[in-house]
Length: 426
Image (cartoon, rainbow, N blue to C red):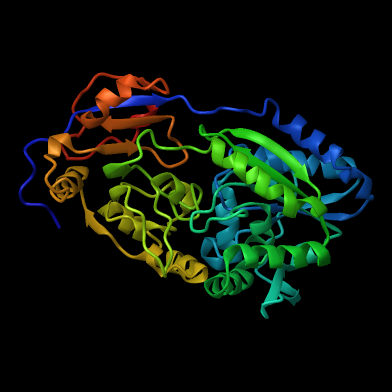
């Protein structure tokens, strides 16, 4: 469906380069090895012991190197390491789908130097105090030890002392599809923090968790911190790591806009396709949404998401190619499991970026289109550089945390009405 009356004038744009906190781990493997030694993990590994290491579905910086470093540590102490996909229902909730997700993230047997044992089978560890069964990956349950590796970051739906991190991996990740469905249902009736802590406590008490390896990233999609955490310390330490993650996370250069134009969304970028903390749209099925940004338009799906378009329902507009590339069955499986059906609703779609701009800027009230506040960026993991409409120009020049990196110029729309897909590589 097209827009029959293109707007005569679009705003000019300029690029800003943000100056954001940038702590970085100098040597990934040395840090992983040092942290595992610090926690005394090697003292518990005996020759021949089976050690399961979790591999999630997020696009974590340096994750193949981090996992390989853990593998080498385990093998150096005589253990026999293997990876288990820990991603709930992602990959369509199938073994083959989850292995494909890992491959797209660079997590392969060759890269990580150990086998991958993928199964959707679980064992029921016990009953939670709230009355539902606690599921745990069968291969992990049969191992002598489990090392839980995951990124600590703000959750895209829930807020609290515990959000997305090691504890979430213990229940959603290692709970597989069966566990994820139950936990998301429980969260509908109980507080998120209550469910996460209740399940994590039971898993830590009853399953062979050797340690957690917490990963924190900075705003430039780089590894900022790696910390090994003993099982007895996870409940106390993870909230502290979450506060650090919030300080270092990416953010938009301006808090309000008429339109956010996002090049790509995907499960490798965020559980909701794009980080709702960044775009200020944490959504509950029973609550409202924030409206710091009037409209969101999505231009494409990331290659690594393998057609999973979860989160597309949080956008009002998209390129038609997004819907063509969408794996409907996989996306629906994900949102149904998570209990957030709105994540798969379909936005208005248009073949070209020009049509999207014309529609969006025709419904922003009394503001003339050339004065519209528009932010265009690659994805919510990559915000070091953002294209901003001219309405932000004066403020950007006055701010010390922003570098104006270009002159004001027209959007680079091609003859076909589309923006370039490789704009950020230029």
